Length: 207
Image (cartoon, rainbow, N blue to C red; front, side, top):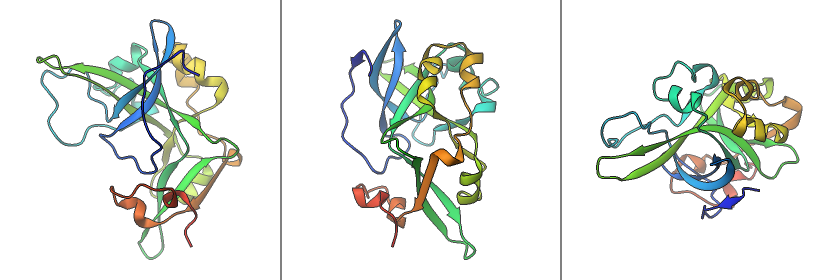
């Protein structure tokens, strides 16, 4: 559990980029729980971000060469997003994108690795935001999400402290595809594609 908990949120079943998500990070050597915008806004930009897409995911092998993520990565601005699962999509033979819900077995809540940054405008408006880190997909996810060779970086419990406190080299070593036998997934309703949908039926197996 974080030492300091500043976050306030309700259970969500459908979260889109640019919305705020709970995150755990370090502050002055202690863990704290805060809310962050999903979609990184780097502190290095010179003006307030314009409406539109911002990077909500970054591949692990691109962290050191991506202009917007290199500085927060090397300076240790890493965080953990607690989630109950995530959605992915399978392209069927009929060219239909079937949504699936994936999660580790026997873990009601787990942590996904992310990096964060703090943007402060000339008007002193502050936005703290984050990007989820992706790693090569395991065989289960390659079979399901057959057009996407990546999956979120699910952290093992023993790697939480390494991710938050370790060197960039140690943290990078903790970013591994989660083992197939530790995961399960099932198809869900296409209602997940509607941003307004947000209820427990979204994660239940489709009929």
